[in-house]
Structure formats: structure tokens, C-alpha cells
Amino acid sequence: MSSISKHEMEKRRQKVLELAKQGKNQIQIAKELNVVSSTISNDEKALRKAGMLPGRYEEKNQRRQQVVELLKQGKTREEIAAELNVSITTVTTDVTNLVEKGMIDKRYVTRKPNNINKDINDLINEYYGQKRTLILFSQYIEDCKEKFKNGISLKKELETIKKVVLLTEKYEDIAFYARVSVRYRNFASIKQIINSQINNEELTKPQREKFLELKKAVDLTHKKYIAIDILKNNTQMSKEQRIEEAQRVTGLPEIELLQLNRKYNNKKIQKKDDNQPSK
Image (cartoon, rainbow, N blue to C red; front, top):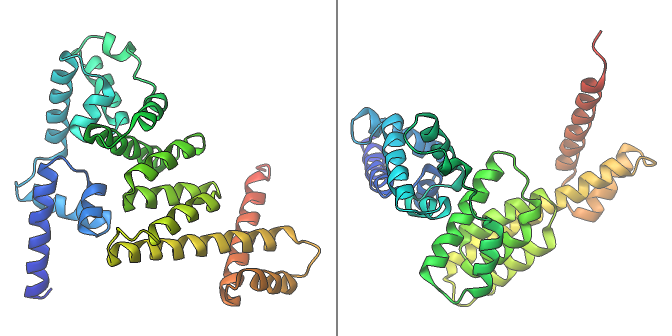
């Protein structure tokens, strides 16, 4: 490793340390520094080893002590999550753990959290630029990201997420909405939002370029979905005819269509094998 790269790594780790002390998680730090999450994970491991960051166990215990204090102040889980910059799911897990250890009363577990979707939609209707509301919007998006990461369906929340990102207009929020939209093939909506940002004259050139790159990624994924549908559904055609038709409709190169066709066939074979009764 060169001395320059070591210097750059040390600079980045110093920034990671500052952001971590502000309560930001790995995903947030990675986005701010424009690196992958695994890089931040390695940096945090190195910082912990050097004694510059508390270990995960200590970190968790410190947060749970804060949760206890905030609960005693009468704050809701949503308010605690916003204050500690963590997801509502994390706060709920902490509350359950604290009850099991006898550190807080059971009433905190039986107390149902607020209906986040109802609250968010009320806030959307009443929003006129309040800073506190923007913090709650950010918390809502972070909670949705955690659900998405854990494979929890967000299909019913698509419209609410869309309303929030239209108000925040943050690239990271719109990029997340793009991922969710792609999952549920909601291409028209996300393309409309991205195009509006590309044409937004209040944005800087680098900001618009980021949205252009996002548009390219969404367009490519859309074309792949269309191609897969053609390859999958036109069974009356030969393989060559399906490839030719998919190429005509999407403009994707033949080699990419062959790879998509191979992946689809492999999944079909795997599904068939999974359904075979064991001997």
C-alpha cells in the first residue's frame, strides 16, 4: 500500500470517527463519504481495535441507557428513534430487551407505537417546511430502508414513500424510492420523479448528473424486465426468435439477452428441482 493511499485512508477514518460520534450509522456514513458500506465497516473495526470507538456491545448498552431515560421522560418510540438517529425497529428491540432484563416496566412493551403511516400522512398534509417534520420524514425513510433490507414488503407504503420523497427532494431518498419501485415494477412513477429532478434548474450540474445516472440505471432495469417477460412468455417462438424480439423491443445487446435467458432457465430448473418430492 502506498504512503498516499495510507494517508487517504487515515483521513477517511478520521471522518468516519467524527460521523460515528454524531450517531450516524454505517449506511449514512457510507452515503456521506460516497463509499460502500463494507469500507465503513472495516474502518469502524480498525477504529474499535485502536480504542478510538467503543465496541458494539458498549455502544448498544449506551444507547439502551439513553432509551431508558427517554422513555421515563414520556417520549414515544418514534420520538426516541428520531432523537437517537436509529430506526423504530431498533428502539422496539431495545425496549423488549430492557423489559426482559427487568430494567423497565412491562407497560413500555404493551404500549403500542403510533401508527407511523397515519402520522406521516398527517404530517405530509400539514407540511410547510418545518425542520422537525423533515427529521421525522428522514426517520420514516430510514425505517423503510431497514424493512426493505430485511425483506419486509413495502408495496402498501409505496404511495406514502413517494409523497415523502417529493417533499424532501433528497437524492438518497429518491434513489431508495427507485429501488422499491423497481422491486414492484412501478417504473412510470419513479421515472417521472427523476425526470423532474433532471430538469430542476435549482440543482447544480453535479446533482443533475447524479439523477441522470440514476435514470440510466432505472431505464436499464426496466428494459431487462421487459426482455425477461418476452423471453418467458412467448413460448410459441423459438429461442432465437424470442432473443430477436427482445432485442428489437428493448435494444439490449444479444449477449446480454442470452445471459438473461440463461439465468431465467436456471431459475426455472432450480424451482422445478425444489418442487420434486424427496426420495
